[in-house]
Image 1: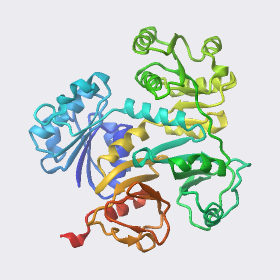
Image 2: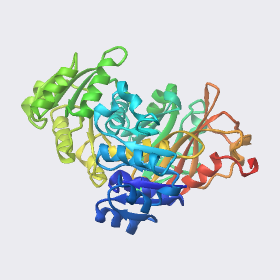
Image 3: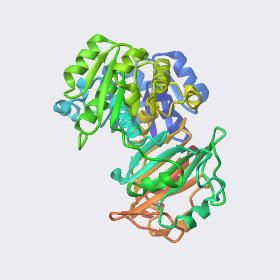
Image 4: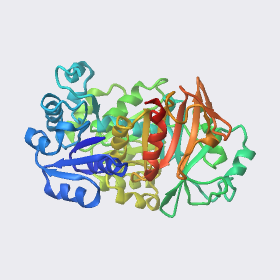
Length: 459
């Protein structure tokens, strides 16, 4: 597949890293020559320096025979015009644009993206993706990372194992024997900074970060088995009342049951007034989220969780630490810089949201071949959890799991047949129409895609 990626910032670079690693023909376009140079020096991609919306620049990038264009520059308008030029001048069939402005995302203006208007096939909103990720973190306080799959019927949870975890030093195959009715699979483990797909004989140790996959109804017992408790979040303090904080507060207001009470702290007075106007039952306080007196006024000591989503990583980390020191038991921070992540555990920050990872996962969902329904990128693009519908022409259709030629770094998390989710077993047969969830290390994603695509016998 020939792909043009416009914008070589964090998101563009990560998408280029994924696609070039899977042997796609990738060209990166950016008007910053340093970013283009970084991409060409570190990845197997071609680079073009120039404005992505200019027809001659896209022509030099190979737009005449490109299969897809991904517009992920820092400008919404450049991304929109780039897609228009790609469609009108070069006839590129698949166009994805990242748009930040909420005005462009309002449902009443959705006709704007029709093919006869502004032809964009997929619109990605980083703020909406991050807000959704924040809500999932708040709903799963025992996890440092989480994502829903199979239409919300199953959940991926990243949990850190403590010394009191009941299943430490137990081979994974024994876990299946001890808890035979529990449909949980350990998909990945990070130990001493290295992510790997565990084997049946591997044991778990204190300090390991484990990625577990289980049906929603099995989540409470899964957490109990792994030494975690699930507490409902009824009082939440949100520090940062911008697009992300506002979206989270609005979602909490409209959540069924209406039991979550939130308060928002925003430093900018105009932004605080905007948030106050948009919210009905949420109290908005204007001031610095690092101020102890203001945190006390927000009731931080009685809060179940604090969510810090300002536009500055260091402020987010400090505010999370301050909130914890004032008595809040659970802190989630927005972290853009992945090099900051190793500091979070020592600072006592319980969970984080990486906007780049959420945006990359969203874009990958629309790129993957086969009937891919969901993709979630783990860590620094080290692995992916992929949900896909099995096609009748796929090589895995009709095969038992033990007979499928999965690469070594690949594990199956679950198979849904009709409305029932099955824990993978060697004799379980995968049929056309089933939905399968697979974990793959980054190097093995291309091989998994081949298994999910149309079989060569089809042609």
